[in-house]
Amino acid sequence: MPSVEQIASWARPPRRAGSGAAARAAVVRHIQKEAAEHGATLAHDGKGGIDPRLALKVFRRARWRCENDECPTPRRNLDLDHQSGHPREIREDPKAKKNPRDRAAAAAGDDPKDDRFLHVLCEKCHDRVHDRERAIERGKKPKPMRGDKR
Image 1: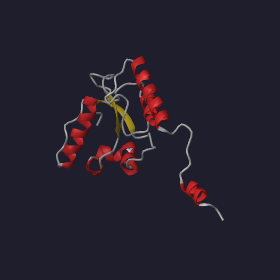
Image 2 (image 1 turned 30 degrees about the vertical axis):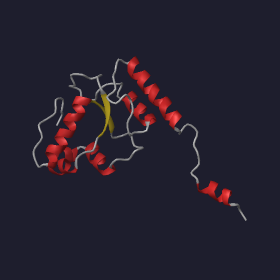
Image 3 (image 1 turned 90 degrees about the vertical axis):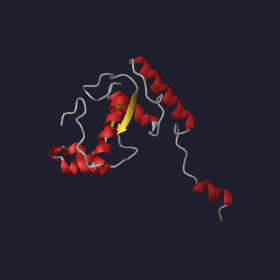
Image 4 (image 1 turned 60 degrees about the vertical axis):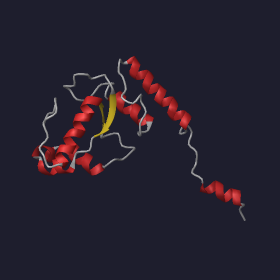
């Protein structure tokens, strides 16, 4: 018969190599270092609710720039945003209905391990995105964002 300690050890989740706080802190330091090397600043010093390894992947994919093509400050105060594809906008906007990325983002929700719908925005563009979402929720047609292709 197994001992109480053995049963308790079976119930604990296995420890993965490199998944502890020290490993996450090392990745955050690496994010900060790469941002500085690319002349970019980070909105929250590279810290946030997203796994730092995933954040690093998204920052690299965006080449350490705001992904709004018309952004006046593309390397300043970078932040990650989950592209939500607001359901009301998709329902009411014919262009959003036709955009498979918007439909897929709305269907996917906030999967913490899915980087397909994470994008890099500077703080100003990030605030504008959420201002648009709040306008949509109030039933108003939002003003187009600078660089908005729709």
